[in-house]
Image 1 (cartoon, one colour):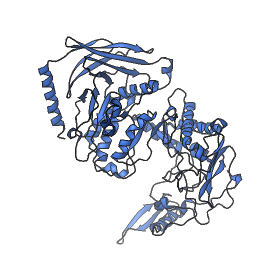
Image 2 (cartoon, one colour):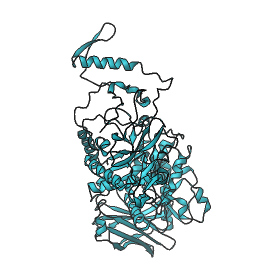
Image 3 (cartoon, helix red, strand yellow):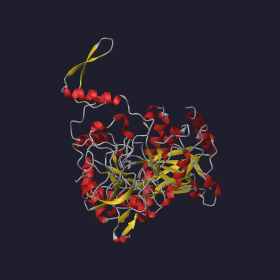
Image 4 (spheres, one colour):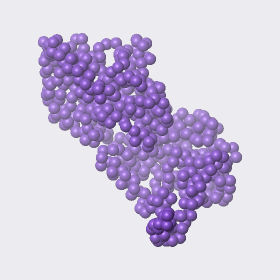
Length: 600
């Protein structure tokens, strides 16, 4: 790649390790580029030092090949400002003096390199002598990497996979211009409005997947641009879009679709890497239709109940796999947000959690969080079924509570609860009251309360609408442990006519064989006759036959009480309903259980 003739080459010694966040280009470092510095394949943007703006430019794909494909031999670094550099040649602001220890560290490092790594005598204070061996170690005393970064990545991914974790790697659209060690450096942006640019990006993603990547997180793809008043590209930037998208237009025309087109390109790259695997792409920016390619989240929302409330309605946007950052890098304004939020989050169908390092040392209410995660995995069959219904019928996976009763205006102000199909989860967002101490405003109809005998002051309350059946499974450590022959369970809430119905969807969990019929949609019905409830399979859809497994049925009686029975899935299961006095005894036992559980 050609470089500007007046650009200054910077070395690692030009940086102060502790002041990286404050680095700006020096006065004699140029950010201008000639036309020869770029290829003609891609459109992007580069920094104009005179206008403090971003101007259209062109970009050769070799600019990012080292970043995405050939990391070996490059000691790349990730930081919060890696996507763009301060475009002005300015000095550090006053009041931020350079660390006085930096020069001393450089002298020690230079001396150690001169000595060839031999043992040297240094003063240990009070006349003592200590032996110190330095073999070209870094400023933090850590030896530099002596093996390929690809080996490091693979080792990390292997460790994650061995314990059931998925590796979701982040790719931003802003790509550093220089190949060397300079940080941060000017950025260029692919023009995803061009088919050739999307194809180029998809092929880079295809190669990137070979690192053991399970999914890709597209962040900052509005696109976000620092040192800009609008925090994005100037509206005057020109995109050389394809004719069917509108042709050559300024950024104002294409801004809303830029993130979706990037997500589409990433999705297509993952499909190229493995056509038999369903891609997982997470995008911060999207547009109508982006649900075909990626999940979405709210971006950098704050760790507040107010922002969490606003995210609940995202399910109505046509983006079924959407959620919010539960705990992020912003300051938490509510003292109990971390405690309650980490319990509330696993009940939602999709959340992102980013923890500051200091938060890891806090007491996180271990038992409540563990119980919440167990609930999460028990509800996986139900949540997976909801995604099937979203895929085939367009119904939301998670939705505000008012969707259960559109005629009740009071529910439109209820932001403490949400729906997962006929399941309602009710949470407390008050700093001094638990969920069992607040009044629960429920939609019209009969809602049966229940739990998994895991009541806890931190856990949300659960309700099931009458006439509904939902499935749940065992509490696995991760979905990779699940097996189709695992025991399955049903919660049944009979309506006033003594009937209920629900569905369970199953397939391989990955791949596309379901499009050829390799799936099973089972409809369960329950009906009471002569005080006996019969639960059976009314119909199935798909080429799969019912798994050979046990089935446990729980009949909800109200106020947390229930009766259950075991049987074989696919065969009728009958349960004799208890008498009124027996129901009252069961309710009394449940309330005693609640009183004991709420004393944690």
